[in-house]
Length: 249
Image 1 (tube, rainbow, N blue to C red):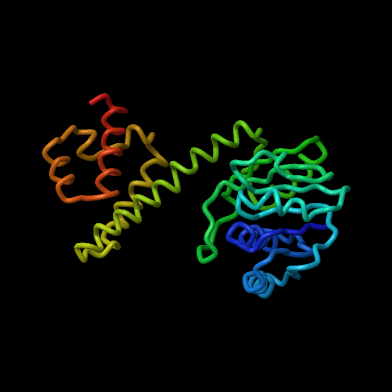
Image 2 (image 1 turned 90 degrees about the vertical axis):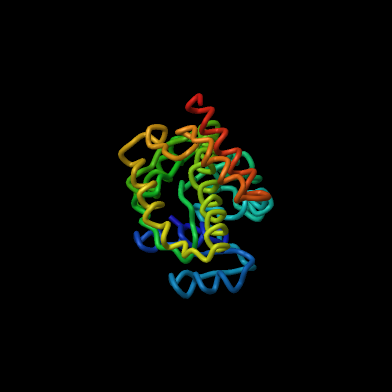
């Protein structure tokens, strides 16, 4: 099977690397960022192009959600399968006379961070059983966690991921702003962060909650509010209100 990855960002890089490590040959990586494509090509020994999109059996589009539709129009071959990697778009966003699908890896991707691809969940949606089998077989060579998912279900998977990853990371960034403002090394907080994440492998998140809000400790809450301003203060109030409401305090 001839496979082309379209894109040069974090998802494209990691999928190309996962394919390479699992001996799934890629005939090309295609995109518009010559510099990034060249880096991927040199590291993984995959041909790249910014101009000539090769004919393939499977195209995997790894670009931003806003670009998926326009990029999908570049594929003019009819007898092929095209998959996007978005968690929040239907497969029908793909505009062409080919077979449409989604190939969604549930993970946060950064080029500078190594990943254990075996543990990444992949969610597959296709138009027919033959394509489902093809994508399942492909994903299963990378990961031991491959599932079918409708778009309706995938929307909620992506929403959950935003809460569990993107929002949490933003709180880390805000926390670092506070520690930096007082010249407190953020490294001091890494064991706490690690334990917080590790704990929910064993305890339900609701049961693992600690802190002044769940204790309804108004003295500490008011003290903290006096130390904050602007966006961080609003986040602090909103988060504490949500915790108190969940535990009906």
